[in-house]
Image 1 (cartoon, one colour):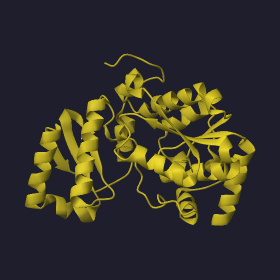
Image 2 (spheres, helix red, strand yellow):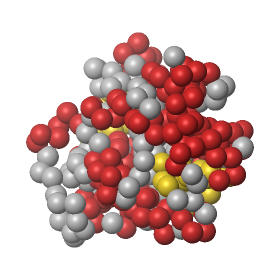
Image 3 (tube, helix red, strand yellow):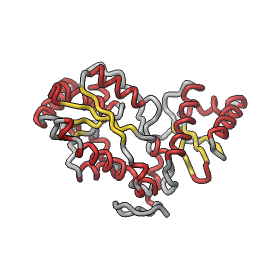
Length: 282
């Protein structure tokens, strides 16, 4: 099955012609970048957006992956933090982010010498709240892994088959996704999140975690249930509180339900969505 997915994905990308792959450094976009290079060679390019929402180390990883794959790599600076709809963070923040990214890539398509923009969406992404997919449709962005009928499990299996080092890398969505809906997204806040997560990851050797930025500068830490006891031990707890206060958080809490990817989406029914058009933050 893995080889069948590989052949189908490469063939789909070959039919696109000259392609630009939005490469984040995660397993999904890495698989598409590898397939694009196999299908198109020097007619393929990987594009990574550099902005405050990119976690520490992710840009370096994207550069490393591109070099290992052999695909041409471009780094662009996006300005989603200047977009009012993005700052407002009403639940459709990702729409504004992806719109900014895809519009920027569209503008430089002649320089990149490509015709089609691709993303790393797979079938599992269609079942979650993904306003970024609407942006992809509006900008005619292709999702080759969806077209190939691939799930997240299929993607990881193919990444392992191709020897990509990120095949088992935990999901690393943008830092802005940690900010609770309705709380304004700012570069300062995502930097606080990045510093807090880096501290927890390095100090306690954690692979999966989130620091959620809630109202009133409250940090809600999510780690796997089996790691909670380590963090609430007296010495660890004092160290965490001291560091988080130093970073700028006023309150620190640990979620007893443990790590749940995308759990902020549970409150979307209670969030008043704003129309997909720029508007002043209020």
